[in-house]
Image 1 (cartoon, helix red, strand yellow):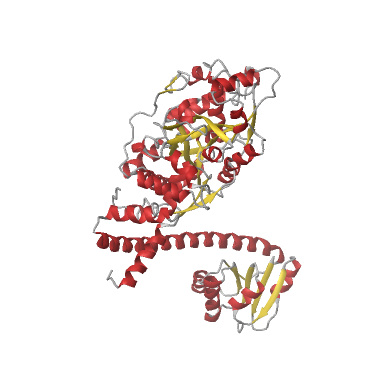
Image 2 (cartoon, each protein chain N blue to C red):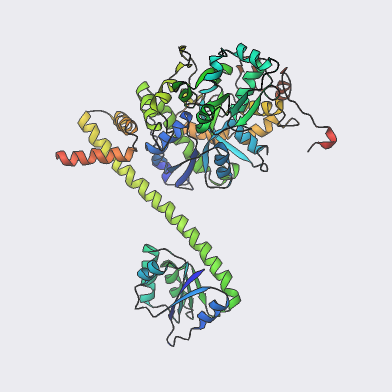
Length: 401
Length: 193
């Protein structure tokens, strides 16, 4: 742990404008760094008291972030862009992404009933869906602008399944997924852990794919607030990033730390799920519900020397290309301009340097996704159009807004 | 809105009561300052406290201080006292609005609104300050426990922190709780901090 005169933050002009920060989180394994930071004394050295507020759904978290009940929150990467672009029912609100909190660790799961019919591979699922006369399957995600909707759509489309034409989709809050699956109201879902593992553990579902099999080390959760909050409280925002970087580093310092983190977050006040459903996948040990076990090379990660936390512009832009692809955006936004406004690179850089975390030189990164396509942040408008399956809906120029 | 009116004018002219009733407020009137104000506030739970006083005495200020400390409420003082020193003293003791002379029914609502808003801001600031004090107090306790652990386990600062955190996390506790346990255990075993 770096301790470069932490008191310099408490006194003097860098002192946080607020000493209490209200932080929202969803009961998910990838909220661990917030829970660890708030309970294990990581924010006090920076003059902050973090108050955790568990939220029942992403829509509740979003509303509380906008109405000021929450100062900042564990957020879905794409949800923040949905708010920025006004895709979430409310009018557009300028948002700020302070840092990445987690990569990987989401999963696509199908009911045990479908698995019993032999639908245990992507191919089998594709055949079932395209079989004439069969009722369409209902697949759930967590919010229309969620990363889970986009992972599910990307994965289905890569199998030749059109997510919006060939399936029904439903929105279900993460902790309720397993109940809906048990009740037969949904046939499968994409969600963050432990809600995939809980279903396999109870014999209610099987894990067909992990999100890291779609995009290894994909962007997932971020620490976000409104742009107004970040601009009015820059020192608070910076201190918050420092505390969370320290906590993220601590979690990944050793296997023992990861294990005690799993124990902490399984508590009733936090994720409120059995440790057995949290710990294995958190440290990369997967079992898919069909007896197939593997150690994942790209498990849920919180730090990886700061690679997880860097708010890359290309990560933010990718989510906008998928909004465009699936018709949530009817014209091309200013991909780079908007990402530059939302991703708080300057604040992140200052905080990371303060706690001795390496900041990559480049603000774009490149990745090859499961369908072989390369995403490097160059030419996002063309990228959004390069997919054979899509729901691109262009509105004529004279109607554009 | 429930208003506790403290009439401290010599002749108890009741000049405020009529205006307040006219403006549609629910008024509870108390006379003089022989009452135990914090206790009355606890019993009556008013939204706002109004003082009507020719010149706030030291006794009045003392009552205001007690209220601010124990039962924080917006306090408005109507007075004939022009002395800026008295006014400053009143604000310092926790008065949200200090109004000299001129009581008109139509002015009461905006005065009350300003006093309530001012009170809310003060309360938020107070909460932030309290949080800051508590943070510092907790840091000191954690530092103390860390020092004890370093001695007991013969380890360095970072190792001591990690040990305390692992213990806290595996028990689903906060770091401060484990720090307090270490301090208690040390006292019990008679180690010198």
